Length: 81
Image 1 (cartoon, rainbow, N blue to C red):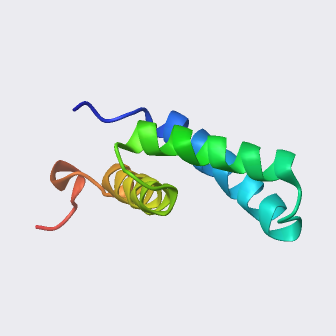
Image 2: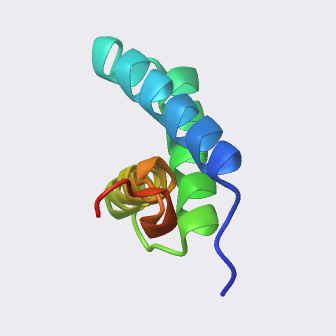
Image 3: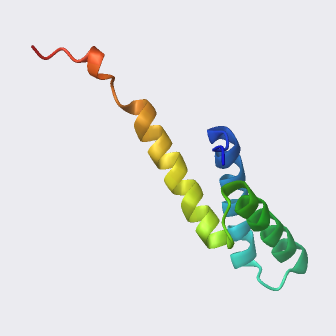
């Protein structure tokens, strides 16, 4: 399975976290809960996971490892020697 674009993962994860905060602040609001669940489902599909918590964790790991790979200097750029 090809990996999704980093920007797409970041956008979905940010949206999921925003609705998560709103849902925790207003758990009785059906509209907020429904939108939160919808964003969780979208994140599940994007990350290939079965539950929103796993998908959010996978998205965070993907973004973290992707940024570490791009932040590392290449061995050819080393000035040792």
